[in-house]
Amino acid sequence: MTAPHIIRHAAEYAAHLLGFSALGIAPAHADQGERLQNWLAEGQHADMEWMERHLPARLNPELVLPGVRSVIMLTYEYPRHDSRCTSGAVARYAQGEDYHKLLAAKLADIDETLSFYGGTQRCFSDSGPISERFFAAQAGLGWIGRNGLLIRQHGGSYCFLASILTTLELPYDSPVTNRCGNCHRCEQACPTAALKNGSCDARRCLSYWTIEAHQDMPDDIRAAQGNHLYGCDACQEACPWNTPRPGAPLRPIDPHLLMPATFAAMSSEKLSQLSQQEFEQLFAGTPIRRIGLEHLTANVRNL
Ligand code: B12
Ligand code: SF4
Ligand code: SF4
Image (cartoon, rainbow, N blue to C red; front, side):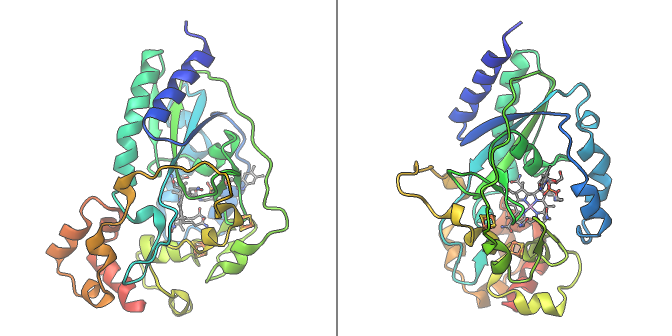
């Protein structure tokens, strides 16, 4: 049988070659506490009812992968630069191609490597019933900030998280110290006061209202929408850990995640008048395609 640290090394090597910026490992049965249940009980998930359905699996990874022992957590950088285009602000994570697809292909390669060592895996990136921020923190990749996001001391929060549940027993990492200190900048910067007690209330979050919601935006949220066309980065822009530090290593950004020039230069007038065919052509294979033309034009009209 191959020694666990050799398997870990093989996974790290594969992850590095595939462009992931860091890898950490947590025990699959780490105690998640009651934060998620409380958040759901308070209705903070708004109309994302799938979150209630996922609860048993979220709390018990055994239901997702019988025999699971370890959760490998990975970070993948997305663009850090200013997210405004001509028509409004698009969240940095959503500017280019759909990351679900991009990362699924990469995760499948690591899955194959681990299978070679006798593991059975399930892989996700924002696509499955697993608390990705919780496991990323347990795996020592960063801490959960007051904006609810996973923050790295040397890299901030502008990254996707991806997870691999595996039946292999691997060497585990330890959580790192929370470095938010007395800072509350994210809470102060949130346009809708959605942040409290270290988590975000989706009922007030612009990311929810401009992407996930299947209901009309309430007037008080609409009044605070500002130039947010799709998603919101305000609580990340305010975070000092997202300011590049002198001497910090430059992290290359996958060109697939950059915004195409045709979209970047498009006016809000043009965007609000797109035909279905033009919408499909412009946004095929991007996260924006997911919300559909009607939701996008409603967002544009509020700008
Ligand atoms: C639902 C969801 C949303 C919803 C709800 C947001 C929310 N409050 O979680 C909406 C649509 C609003 C949303 C918005 C955004 N999201 Co989102 N979202 C998710 C999703 C699918 C589930 C999150 C969830 O379960 N939330 C409920 C809360 C209660 O659970 P949790 O955040 O996992 O919290 C756990 C831990 O944080 C832990 N915990 C927290 N504090 C503490 C303290 C202690 C002591 C302990 C023990 C545990 C603990 O307890 C919780 C339960 O396990 C995850 C992917 C995933 N499967 O995890 C992506 C995810 C969290 N989203 C992500 C992103 C990028 C965003 C946005 C930045 C997008 C944007 N620019 O518009 C915003 C940021 C909003 C914010 N400030 O949180 C990334 C975060 C990457 C990162 N660096 O952290 C994720 C991980 C997707 C991914 N794979 O990359 N999101
Ligand atoms: S994403 Fe925007 S609206 Fe949501 S919590 Fe962060 S700053 Fe507030
Ligand atoms: S802005 Fe301040 S409080 Fe908020 S996550 Fe960043 S360091 Fe923590």
